[in-house]
Length: 348
Image (cartoon, rainbow, N blue to C red; front, top):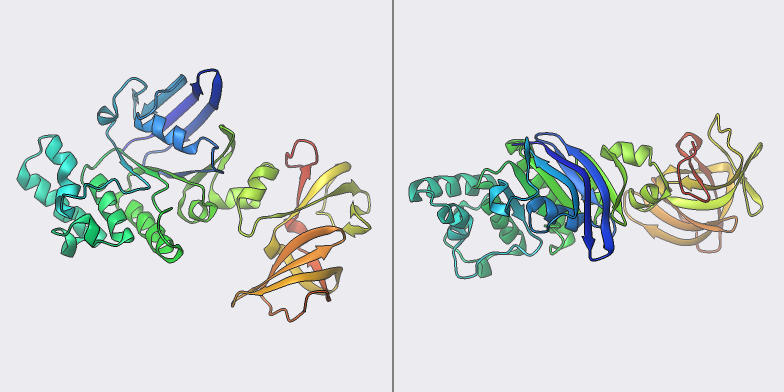
């Protein structure tokens, strides 16, 4: 195991810079998720860490070694890809042990390590099967097993669950997290799915346009997003944003006034952010026109019109209202977020 440090890391393709001076410190044994929309640079960053892409500037350290000029095989990392990358003509056991065989490891040790990894991943009954005889989840376990047997300093995961169905993704992310808790190996995981990031990470790095927007623990990003981009990206359904202005009486927007958290001293144009789950049904709340009601079992999701803004509320109660009817809702004021209208930076 080892720490990982990226210092002012940059990547350019010709004159086009796609990674703009990224600084990230990953502690030994930490599970860090790089998250962001498609094209934000997260996979490029991971590939530079793996040695599959050259860096245009800055330094990458694994442990105490600067690895900028080292080949991938010299970095003591193991990577799990989105498409499994298994050899179709090899059995599960052969796929898992291939990298060790390539390194000249004895057959006895290969067999021991493969059995050990298969035991952890529940693959003991599948070692003589071929990839075509496995489900998607089993193939991904084989790809993970191939990484585990090498006992690397760092695991790198590049969107490993994106090819799986929704139910299997939930199962596999639990297995990956449990695997990390057992092995304690430093892990860098790339995904565009913020639910994966929230449920798996010790620390999340939010990327946008090749720059870091915020780094922090999952609940830190959820509770105190640094700006409107992070606030909108972390959380599902996404945070509601209502444009308006901060005044002495509250937040004015299109004929209604929304309550403000205590001790807000800013004035002028701003964005009012409220998460769907932070609305409450209240007889003395604000009138909202119901647009769509979506019962989801344990909760009800309601799309509604609040003033001129269309917002989403998620309620634990059953909401029987029909489209066109009015319900009364109140934001949980201490949980309201305010952002600068021009820069998107957090105000409160």
